[in-house]
Image (cartoon, rainbow, N blue to C red; front, side):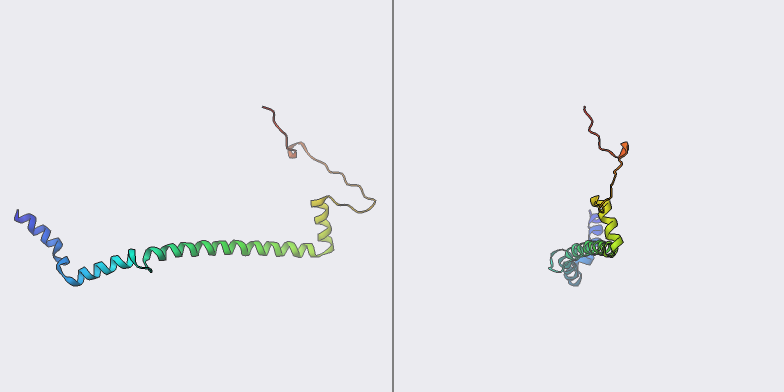
Length: 110
């Protein structure tokens, strides 16, 4: 029985010191319960990373849109876009649209 008391007192001896108890309480308070706790900081840091990634994505999209605007600002680029996307044509001009079998959407009857 004395052996059990010696082992437990050996592990509990540091917790008999008031300074260690106060420091342990302060540490637990700062990690979990305080308004500026580690958990809240961790959550905010992950939010910041997500927002920075979103910001980079939108900056790339803005660059792509600026390139498209630059292409459309010229007369040739605008005409090319109108012909390809809206099948527009000049006067006295005929346009033939050729569709291949593999490009057609086919409904399958089950």
